[in-house]
Length: 392
Figure: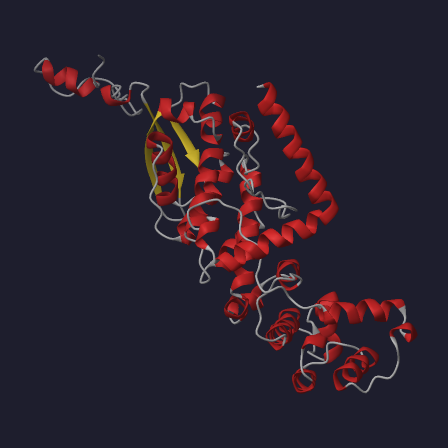
């Protein structure tokens, strides 16, 4: 082991060494605790930098972005720089790669860890975070989760929520086949879509409470549109939805620094002006809402007023196709119950919801499939099950 020059002269009993002193710092001997077993990540902060030490093998075996970082360096470099991350969250992420365990402090913390998991392509942690968010999904932070999902994946909820078999077959072979044809989410992208569906389902169930939150006024138009256009919103009156649209349009005009005239507010809402079911309201409710904000043009407003007062003498044949479609839309009642969520955790288990709600979800699914199609499918499946049991 090479020692610094000053130690050599003192060991020989002499004074300071003759000649120029070395200007380079002495080389530190390799630490026995870090002989390739560990790797150090230097987390750069605004004022201070932090060092996070991790097990090299655990990082390389994780098949994440951090593993690619180590592999790109040839595997011999023991220090790597990490930028634009929270030190505590990054250390929690590293410890998860080592132990496969993580303790979430809150929904916000879970979303922050989901962001790290997505950034470093840790698919296992992505699914873990989605399940944790679904387990603790609550009205108080459902909009926070809902908005975060827009930044992780292309937003498109599943067209048909995955559901389990409605009837258990007595044939063992049928059970074996069903076990290999699960329709639940498998990839992180499918989990993202399922969690989005569950967020919207929870908003449907508690629409009035969610609509009263200030966070609704900060939604971007696409985010607001996805919620407002839902048919299964559980509202005591359409005036709740009208109140939300009135407040959001006013805030949007303020954000854009434009005069909040009725025309500008209608322009901000666009097609959302037709989202309320006006013909399910009373005439008094409609007049009170119209005094606050005029979402419909004069002709449309007069059409709704005539129908509500019963003074409309024109038959449906005298209406234009556009007016007929508008009237049908405004008259459509909302369902008594929303659909069931996608089962991602113990919270979204179907048995946790009322029996009437489960029954309504089954009837909605049968109506979506169609009576003839459903009967034929059930008959065909029953025949196949019988033949499979006979020849098994």
